[in-house]
Length: 186
Image (cartoon, rainbow, N blue to C red; front, side):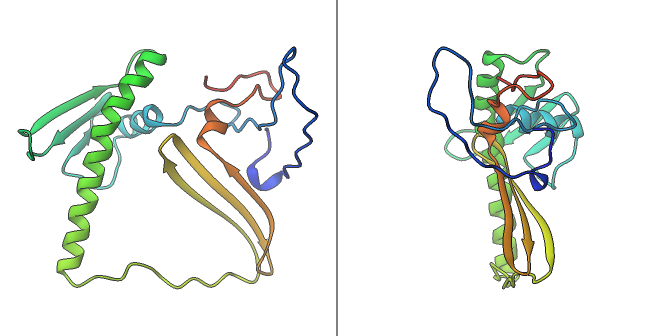
């Protein structure tokens, strides 16, 4: 869809299945009219290229890949390196998924150690009370789900939901052609 999630309303109008012609009830989210691929490949690619991430002793973005240190546990310490492939295809997606296990484990280990450090310091607060705003509000929540980028977009007015849109990883990756003729990532 050429519209931002806040600026559209989804009204499904299913007309039944038609296996002889192409059809979709899904939207086609784009970033600046460009198809985006989400998931492990996209997550590691952007981290490597940007060379930015929260401090992590186990991962080093290099600009052309990621160096990951797997600490000693039941196996000896091991260093892995994922390089950004020259082209994206099914093989490279699956290779990224394999390295993604180490990437996620390294992030998890870092967060666990940070949590233990906060706990030792006596910082045990786990949540903050939230009051729904009463004015007109546009809000968004971004996160990474197992399959990729997930966003929730909400428009509130006087504490009530006016519009709520979700862009799931499958919507980004397997979207239909957009109004400009561009197909989804796969």
